[in-house]
Image (cartoon, rainbow, N blue to C red; front, side, top):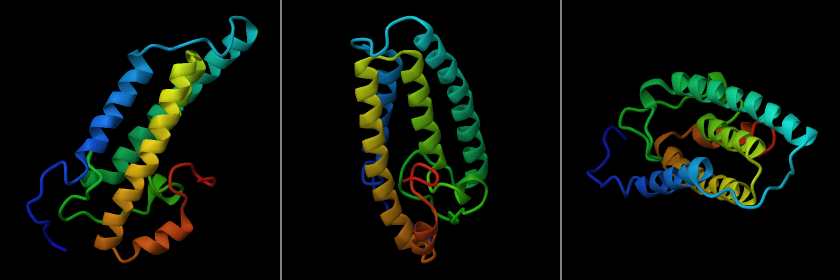
Amino acid sequence: MNSSPQISIFEKGAWYVVVQGALIGLILFGPQGSHLVSSGLLATILQSCGIAIGLLACLIMAIAVINLGKNLTPLPYPKDGAVLIQAGLYRYVRHPIYFGVLLAALAWLLIFPGVYVLAYSICLFLLFDLKARREEAWLMGRFPAYRDYQGRVKKLIPGIY
């Protein structure tokens, strides 16, 4: 398929991006809810782990963006002229940017362990699962080798899911 028909950005999945942005905004700036961990040594340990995981998440997202190169788009609909990337972090997880964002949400939850932050993070995971499912339907239509790739590489969490 050399060029896509003229379809709107919402037909290309922009609503996923809007909801994703809202959930990330809630995770970062929304009400946190009741604390899941009281202050003390455990809270300090979790915050330290959160900072380390957050740095790792940033690194993963940056490398995944570099690996994706000119194929990068915020929309789940692949760009015209896109190629199937299976190298770099894409050898370990089909959606490493989503994985990085989920790690960042986990990091934020460890730093600010509120019940609402947990709920927003779970919603973000569910949204990414839906978004990836839709994106993969388009990718399978564009790239015959995608089905084999799905069989070899996990979707959102390397080696797990």
